[in-house]
Image (cartoon, rainbow, N blue to C red; front, side, top):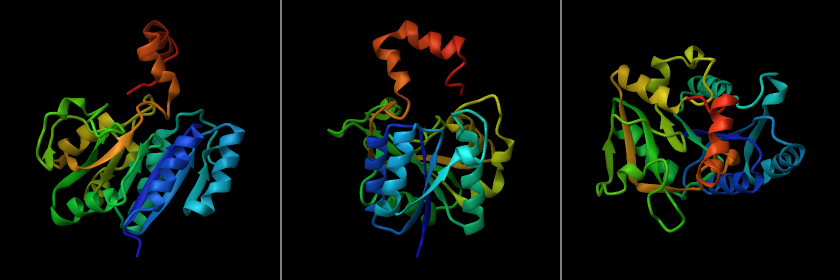
Length: 236
């Protein structure tokens, strides 16, 4: 029986995306996985079409639904929320630069099932050696299995509970933003839900692999801020 809806937004980065999809397909619980292709190039689109049967995901090409240019994270969240509420399932965003473990999704779901009042439940991110990395470096010294936090959760690998999804409509998301993890984290707290980071079920994260231009922040900071400020990219 399907227990969870998993959503992966994709913009190019085919190799990383297929690694993500393969890991999700190997999960210990049955999930419904939807890949939202956000105006990727032709080779990525073809690769996703070829892989969808092998990894068992539903593929949605956003170019068939909207003319709004990428990124279309707001539309992805709205479509996913609608599906989640229709099926009465929690949904997890697993981004295309993240590799989950076989029990990651089951562990996140357990938190949701065992405790009321949770809004968002996120898996801590690490590099391939197991060291906590972006965007959760501020928690790298934490030793417990989980903690509730007032800080924003990233959507790298984050579950949204049915109770929260029923309490706040993503139709209300602001059109002027590109990314919504900070806003939605705060909204959950405003609505008296708790947000939780889980440390005993880490996921491997390759920071910015789904948005390679952001790597300029480290290699060419001046060009990065030109992209971010003058071209109004990456609005949160």
